[in-house]
Length: 415
Image 1: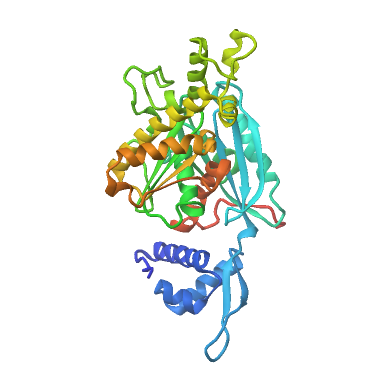
Image 2: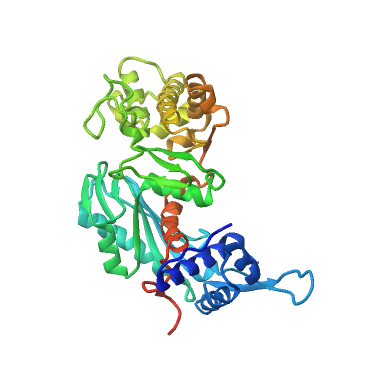
């Protein structure tokens, strides 16, 4: 049973309001009487809060409930479609953005290409343009409540600053300040894989799981860690930098400057480079281009397609990546003891080519007690996982903290 929080009058009122709204979101359609029972708030308090939420259109009266005797109760539910949230996934080659309702139901999505290593002004201009287009596309009766951004690299979520995005070569970019100034909306910035973990926690494979790890394997490699249904960020917001853990002391140089990082061995570009190197040494492969100097044109996608056709070199490349990733995940399993590991990103879409050797490595190397009930699966949210997670960064402030005062919402309805 949820217990009401007590403090100063204004704080208590705000927290109780959020408590009622969250209860309606999680359990609706639900009656006023059942809200009072679930929250332990008095019926008059619930009635007053419900009246406010109805007036502000956050909830609606949906249907008449069953009665064991006497008057039938009117049930309440979240008015999801009257509000919208912008979620942004800043990748290395593009900005993917979505506009959703309060249930993360997709209203619109768009993709904006990013030039290689843009300067901060160019990046912020493209980011603002994407957000503006989505806000403009909200229906006349919808109110946009906030903007969430999942940003590649190190992020300070308290300040909304991108500390360092290595593959974009951006440092200290004030994303929150710029977007809040331009749009007058609350903005929340998270690391992209942390955002992915939030999305899985609310809408994906983590909904019924207390302890899990999200691992994104694409151009980069990172992890989002959820313990006791809370994001674990670490003392300097860098928890989960799985891609920069060392797995080969004599391995190739990583974009971070070190050698032998996991990212330099299992990311999409790393898989492609390993195949290029083997072909240059004389290995036979269907990937061999007509002109030897074109080896650099081989991509991770090409290797994947060749592996599907049974190319031995391509299969070996994915097998090696899966085993190395399995070793790194075994270390995380022994450290954090999660119930589930959720894989996302372009490389994870290779399916059994990657997860087969990954699972085999984990099962053979991990302590039996730590993997007996462990589940390793691919994200249910697909390539929208980070964008939906960015939406969730906004939703979590609305439904978990006293933030739903409406002071910074943009309404598209007529005054």
